[in-house]
Length: 68
Figure 1 (cartoon, rainbow, N blue to C red):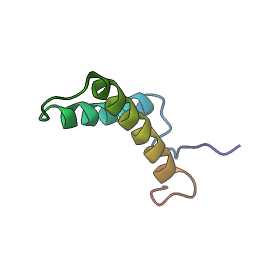
Figure 2: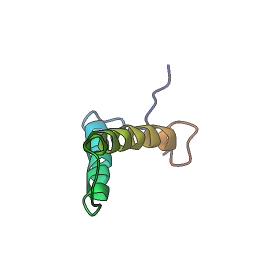
Figure 3: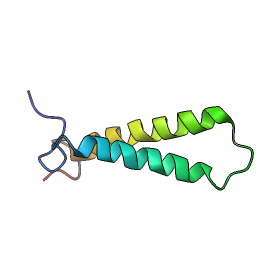
Figure 4: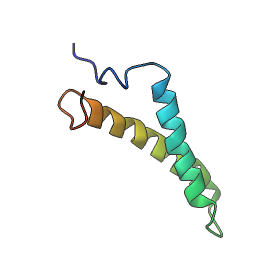
């Protein structure tokens, strides 16, 4: 079975780091907005954390454009 990550992304500590950066982007995007719904503070970071990991898997997979 082929790995979903290339060797540069496959280390176990990089997946939580990528997810944390995605969640941080979600939080930082909400900070300058006024009257943000409380659910936005939950959904936006979670959605962007999952999206960042999915994007890394897609870009660094064997058929992806950033494979090494």
